Structure formats: structure tokens, C-alpha cells
Amino acid sequence: MRLKPKLGDFFIILLIAASAVFLTFSLRQADTGEKIALIIQDGVVVKQIRLDTLEHTEILEYSGEYPGIIEAEKGRIRFKEATCPDQVCVGTGWISKNGQIAACLPDRILIRITGTGSAEDDTDIWLH
Image (cartoon, one colour):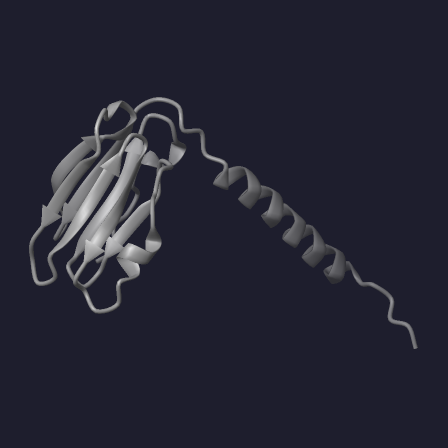
């Protein structure tokens, strides 16, 4: 017995295809213009690093319950070392695109890349 496709089936296929196209184009962010890494601890920006013009590797040590090290190079930044139990922040690796975020949740530290090259630069809402 062969089932006939119904109108709802076509709607679902169209919805999946449209979602795939949307995600493809939305994830391709333009990275032209300035690229600034914001290092945020407890909701407060503690440091800004201009990644697009950075000449030398910059190492930042942060303190808190779980101290660690953030490393920045031209165009990218990462959690290099951390003493938190899960090490997810270190496992995130390098981030380099506008709108990307790396976080050490146990120590409440975020690294967020922002700048003029992406439509995702404007934060609409922060959830804590």
C-alpha cells in the first residue's frame, strides 16, 4: 500500500528547506571591519582587545574562584588554561568571528567578539 503525499507533507519539506537556506546564510557572517574581543566577568566588561590590529600575542591572567589564562592573537582569542572542573571553556578553542562567544561558566567569564562587520553585534537580551 502506497501512501499519497498530503499538503502538510509539502509544508514540512518546504519549512525544512527554508530553514536550511536561512541557517546557511546566517552563519556566514562578514568579518570585515573592526573586531573587538570583550572580556566580561560577572556582567561587567573588564577588558577590550582590538583583535584586528593586534600585533603581538597577548596573555591575560584572570582571577576568581578558578583562575586561568586567556590568549589573544591577531584575529582570534581563546581560553588557554583554566582551573575549573569541566574545562569546557578551554575545549571551546579559538573564536574569531563576530558574534562568537566562549564562556567559563563556573568563573562567570565570557569572551565575546563584536565589531562593525556583523549584524549580530547588537545584543538584544542577556540571560543570567
